Length: 321
Ligand code: BDR
Ligand code: CA
Image 1 (cartoon, rainbow, N blue to C red):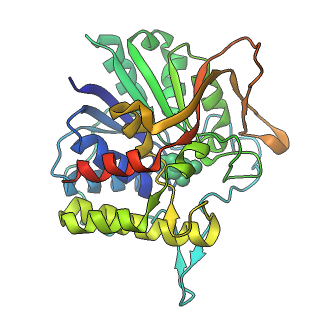
Image 2 (image 1 turned 180 degrees about the vertical axis):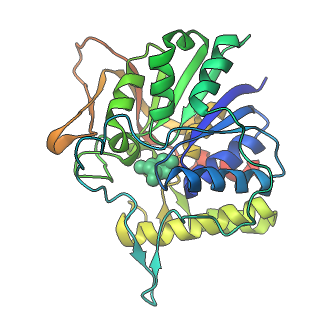
């Protein structure tokens, strides 16, 4: 039986791959996609999501969500993140890991009239069966919905978050981008009481995607697989330049790893159930502090310390066949 999923994205090259995997895989019933600011401002993350929907000839609804974080940048600006730093190719041209707008036709069908926050409340308060929520951008939409209507948690099966990092960070010396972008929202979601699985950089960097994987996708030859292959090519260039992984000429394809986990939980390895708290200020702002003591209280998160590259690549590529 397929699993009902709401995706929350800041599309974004790896977000686009998450939308494609969720839509294409038979084990996932993609109920809706919510958008949030993050990799780009909200109008771009929304339009990019709509362009992907049209590339797929899909009909899931898209709900535009929050354009800013709960607290961040309201009072004073904070440390600028480097997760989305530019890289340069051999000819010295600038490459950005997330284009402002995808090089795809402008969308014809637009997003729904309802805001993503209201959608969460309306859908979850009326749901006849539980749904899994997969936020792969900053956690603002879900946090606001939880503040307005905490009872929505009763109809959440699981929240699978791409975010955080223990040994690996990318936004600052201490923080991963999605959590750093709205730490207060992340902290609220981590304490909402639902089952939470966190897919941090430690998992996404070890479940890397390689140039061979991109070549396999290209051989499939559909518009979606070719677009995914192009995004992976671009990500490999940026990773090689700015965030090299253990294996050369590979990239982290963070967001679809959350979807792959719903299809086969074994793509995540070394998963520990522990207390995770978000640092809300100072040098460690946005850090996911993971308690690994044998005796601890308040265990709230299943935190994955590794990912399985081969399982992930197979699930991802097979979905496009
Ligand atoms: C996360 O931040 C964004 O840049 C990516 O889309 C991913 O969700 C990785 O740190
Ligand atoms: Ca993302």
